[in-house]
Image (cartoon, rainbow, N blue to C red; front, side, top):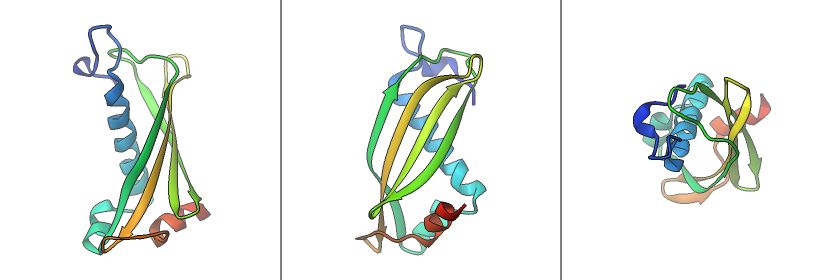
Length: 123
């Protein structure tokens, strides 16, 4: 991805809230590439919802910077945890490390099971 001008604040760096947008987009793309669709899950009564996000800012991104988001997923009890690193491509520097803890609701009831996400853990 590439930082757009309007994502930056007066200091000329990416506004902190935009890092969440980057990682959310990357999670959705990651899941789509693995054949997992949030829309399809929702239609079946399965909702993967964010319970907590922790962001650790390491180095700023600026307008025009290209970056990638590396994503992995693991299971911790009933939670699915995505770890995502935003890497600035010009120097391969870690810009932000993000941990996203997700809960799974099936027809509105908390559960620890989502076969589609469990399949990702095997890969």
